[in-house]
View: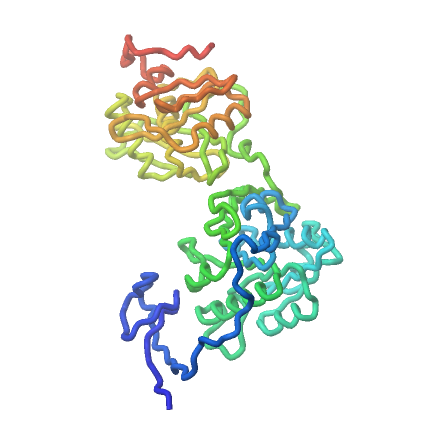
Length: 466
């Protein structure tokens, strides 16, 4: 008689240990080890049946990994070129960001190509989804809707309908009969995902899953969930802004650093093929305290505007407020301006913000932040639109950043003719004048952003009228 072995298994990643430990050695999760009983098998697995015979890698047909466009260009950009047969895609995001609206639009466009599509709602009734579909124009005869919370019922719908695309909203709301735990628990999510992955691979059925996120922005459920699926997408957006970004954090069929841009409107979600206008303000006259840069989200260059306001302060510790930027990084830039560029800010309140609700974490925006603050402090505006690129170091130097050529090409496409870039950028675009600046102080002097009494008479000046 086979003996029963008792071990401890991590509920997050499945790692096992002969004894209990407080922290999983694989995923580093605390308190996730639970007793697990297993009975070793007497038989041998050497004679198990194989799914297909092994063959030379050159003989494997490429059409099995061919993708089909979804009809949503920005989503196809992030996926690579579309959906691959048998691929399981997880779209995660905060509540109310528009995950269901986006996938309902994808399902309707997929059905519009004459392909049978099944949309399973486990959180809303069929009438609620029908109401949203009517508002956003996502109605089609080939789009079938079901409201189910049991995995067995979902699999029955798949058998009866034989769809060419499955959308499940959401994976945390579906349960498996006979499995311990509540809906959304580790055991339930793991079993539901395992079953859907098996069905997707066997039937070559693309599956789109909606996932919840925790309060810190990570995908809810076991970490194993992200390992099981083929693609993990993150849907981001501010509730007070219509801008939405889709990022790929894992992609087995394409690049994992692409970004898709959408805008949430009253009529649903809309693609934004050229989102630069969302991150800049429309003004005819230049004003002090503004600077433009080109950030890079994944491999996509985006024009962004940074605004700064410098005001006198009577407090012993002046305020430093940022919106859309890292407060610590802005504090470093302010210290560099104070010490290296002689821009007096120790007794001033400084407010720095992005335009359009964008969040900028790209180090290439450091120089633009510095110039915006210096412009606000000097109350001097640029008389010619320009782009500022460069990472600012603690010694005041301007360092090179990745993708300078692509960023400058985007600025030239939008009609800009002048750019401040780090030394050694070697930009040679027709119609674009690139001026290299080695330090923040040099950039401040070029744009004449110091008060008249503190300007260096021997410092070079940039002739903006050229």
